[in-house]
Image 1 (tube, helix red, strand yellow):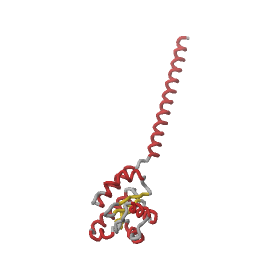
Image 2: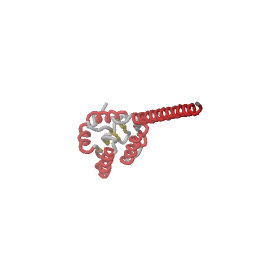
Image 3: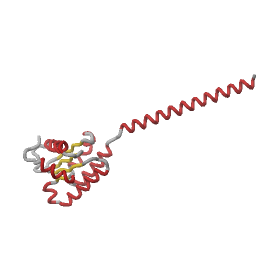
Image 4: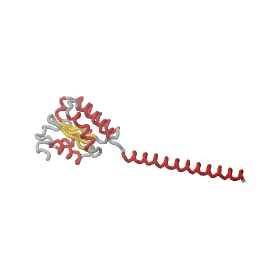
Length: 174
């Protein structure tokens, strides 16, 4: 459940402009907002999806509240991946990436004070973590079918060559 003291509507209004809602930390460090906007743009340009970065203020009393906040933002906005952080923790939710891919890469992000740098590493790692098994399966099937066709054609040619040689030998001996 989203804590009552978290203004989700204000966060969502902030996100609507540029995918970044950093609250007072953004006011303290204006360069962080610029860098965060560049990261959001980078994520979109690399087909990661619509990344949204949120600094949750005040920090929730329960760590699990970060997930509830991120899920609410994911549901109510056009964000496809939400990174919600506070001074006490954070969580990440996504429509585009599996929970396994996120969890395999989130700990470095959530424990790193370099918000933008760690988020960029996260974007690159998670985006690289996804594997297009459908494409790999299709390529493997194509290789197998090609090998089968080549083997069949070669076998047929050898058989025809053997039959022709036997006929030629039979014609010579007759």
